[in-house]
Length: 148
Image (cartoon, rainbow, N blue to C red; front, top):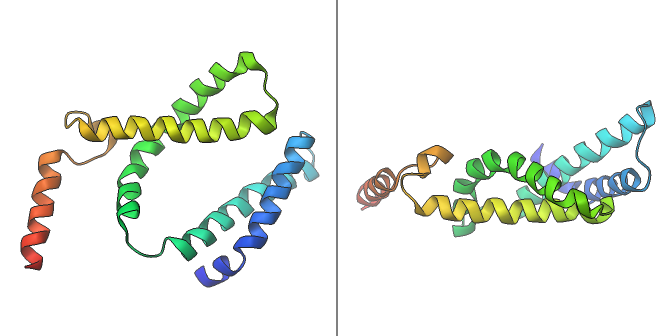
């Protein structure tokens, strides 16, 4: 399955971006065509993301380990950050083509900044699903001693 998803990543990206463009240009109604466009955009985005991830992230690296630890805290934060950012941007009445990417990039940057702060404060780590510094250091010491 993964090879098929990887092989179709560019097609899925093209269709997903095209469907997103159609949604930005003309807000879809509740009819079958609008629902189809929304579904197509969502599923193609998922297939494209999985295909590119399989192609480029299928090996271990320092970035992958960092982002793996960051995944749960970013997930926990993102909805609140999106809502607060959208409320802050609302008075500006930006066009969707500007507001959408601004929300995505802003949300990612803010969530990543909060994660960076949380990961450095041992008392906050468990609240965001992260192992405490003592637990993490003990696990790292065990794996080093086991590999020796």
